[in-house]
Image (tube, rainbow, N blue to C red; front, side, top):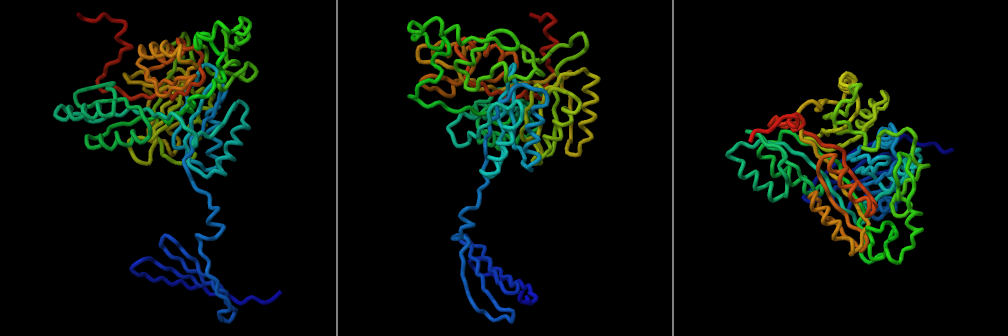
Length: 476
């Protein structure tokens, strides 16, 4: 083997009116870097004695390496799972172990299944590997990246601002512009509910920041694929209520064949039209929720009830996995989870609903405070608070039954956000009871997909709590 002379390293930098040029001499190789848009690297092959033998000028932008450099993009991943204890922690762990920071996560459990909507930034190749790892989880039914497809996307935000009486008229003007809703008002503060795409959320925060933002609770983005006009419905035999004009030509045995028994009793029509069918064999025996989705507003005989917790944490990779790991290791079942940016830059707010007794939740809060990335944990259960959820629901209907669905939607103040020849997608905000009532009324038409956020909650500065007023008579 030929002897190799020691190499010397020398850096030179020069600045002119156009760009910054840096040069590094490393023995045989001299590399020149330019800060302009079209960077070029000059590589000079030199002998051990410093004599220049060959000069080769290579453009970085023209090289195969630059052409194949992967681009980091924001991806929206939809994960459809069966209900199982600890599933949220396992899904968050897949991203945490690979160093991904989940920008937002929204999940609402629907009886025996749930649809996660996760927003994360990364390259196409690595995201594909993450999706393959998610598919290996036991109770994950479907994983897909819907970033490149037409979609209906929505977020929900509760924002509390300072609103002195002299500025209240201007605040109400902005509320009307952004089509927000007032959910609580006191002498010097105002809490509003806003729904829309991420760009609208940024615009709302920017315009209200001059008044002073006290608190922000945001969900992650939820999204459903837009159906294309003119396509034939793959589930046109789903329900007689969905397609009344086709009922005459439909044999009776077809109707009975689409009804199946579910593990929790009742009937399930998923075999005929659910986009993500969940059969009894796919459902884990260890289910978290009951037929009413498991949320207990009042204590039972053992003192068990659903507690609403609000956490402020650092916005860093792996924090969500650490927080959900505390719940999983102690056997707590997370019934609702919403993660979004907080009012302080670099921090996120996690709103979760967890069943337990007052004593067990108090111990859980103490364990959460031991985490380095956790700044604040509050149990809002026994305080007056405003709560909201957001739901996108896609129903199978044709033109003949569309009017009936829109009439039901108007009663619940739901908005139609997408219409095709065989479906209609509705957007609804409210509390859990409102979501349950609408879903039950729309079940005869055939529900194709449901995407729900978790519960958002902020303390009412007015101090009004309707739960404690229901047992008293109101003065006339």
